[in-house]
Length: 122
Image (cartoon, rainbow, N blue to C red; front, top):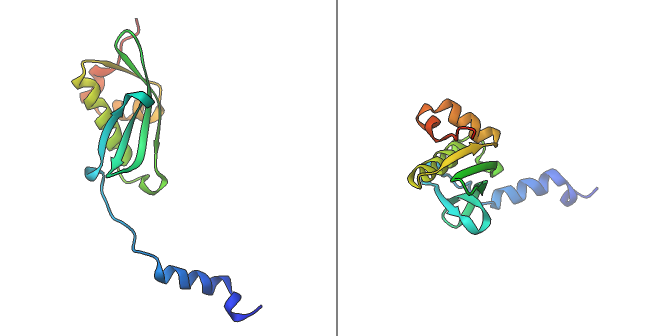
């Protein structure tokens, strides 16, 4: 093996030229309803860093089915920012939720101020 073929040396070389990690916080993110995609998106500028998929029901319920957060943002409060934004929008629209997504269900459980948004079984 030639010295210039050493993978560790090459990795060090490229890391030295890599830009510094971008720092941002959940407060910088905006929650946007994208009805044509049936999801709410969590955006940092033009970048989508998370989403919550939903289905609208004719009776005014929003069925929250699935949530994902970009790997780089996990464990930093971005999921909570997304959940809070979704629930604020649902409240503003006078709707109720059926939280099938375990993350959203747990968020609601831990935040009593959102309990009234959960649809009662009809």
